[in-house]
Length: 514
Image 1 (spheres, rainbow, N blue to C red):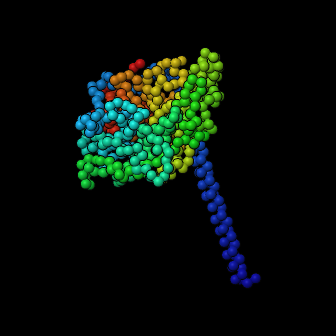
Image 2: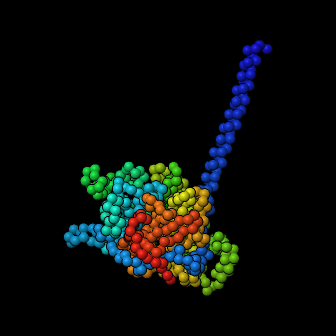
Image 3: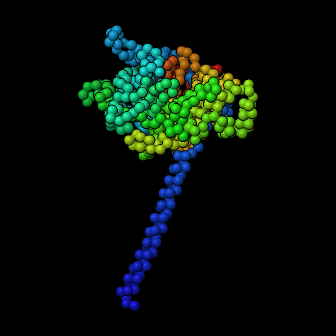
């Protein structure tokens, strides 16, 4: 054999060996990528946390030796609640300004849930109507701005800028069919974001309420709006909404009928109606991925309502509770209670979105309340110190067995859950059973629509809880301390109404009592 032939064969052998190593590395990389994708898919399809019956019935015991979960008593503060002074609209018929009341509110945040600094302003949106609260006949989202440089967080610092949308569906593409926007009657709660701190646009998510012929039509909806300085390019001159530049107004999701119930699937069981929900969209960004949580109900293929609510011990809290309760409910005397439990299937769902704010994936819920509640509200989700915190609020009166366990009557609640392994991980109840805050449903100090939010600067692990007072104005903001799987309401003081920082003026208070 010639020397040149030997060299060629040797080189060919090296190439083959090198090829083998290259093939092995590629295979290993492919397997790693496959494993990561499988883990992501597993997390996305994680089973939800459950708001169990045992958790609700254990609320009273949580207060035995602590005040950590009691809301501040606003009747014991030296803070006098008032309407938002600037919240008025001019009435050309009378030549007078009519009062605009505000209830469910939410701050404009960055995509990670931190209160945004919009060109020197903090912004809040709220549901509004003229004179008194009116959810069903023309509720509108209003915009309020607070100038940061004024260093004033009194309720008078919030300036009302008017309706976010001058007309229903403003900024939609009229060349595209959108049956839901065609039918809108009221705008309900949502969330709003400054996607780019250098931009002058906001991304808004909200609920399109469109009751039609007895069906409880609701749709998750999104749009982009633009704000501009009142004078030229001087942001310090104030803000105005440029309604002509509203865009990308569209329906996002109305339910898939399998994981999440649709309005047409809402039904009755004997004397109990179905409280349908497809509302309260809350956006959050995790890395490069967009997610949307929302209030809904479980669908026919995933933790459905009905007989299933009497077959799953997870809804009850433990096996003993499950057996005792399902046996008790067989008694004909418990029929009314049975029927309410039968219908209870509230859920807080989750979607992954594309970058154009359309649905990419329909994911499993974060939380269900099968057998306990048919309505839980205002989901909020954010990351803090490597953990993902999830919150929801609800009325104690809505518990399916409230007449058998009357402690929660005329009370309002904030519950929370936490995941140690990412946004798509398994959520566990905070404080053992989920209880974060209990408030009294008592005028004139009634507060609700609790929304925990991250201020721009967090001190002592304390975040803010915003809410409304008496369905007409911003309530004093509360402080909530986060400590891993535990929380504590700071109830010896409150912040100014609508406050979005933890460092402003405080007013002495004390815990509420039963």
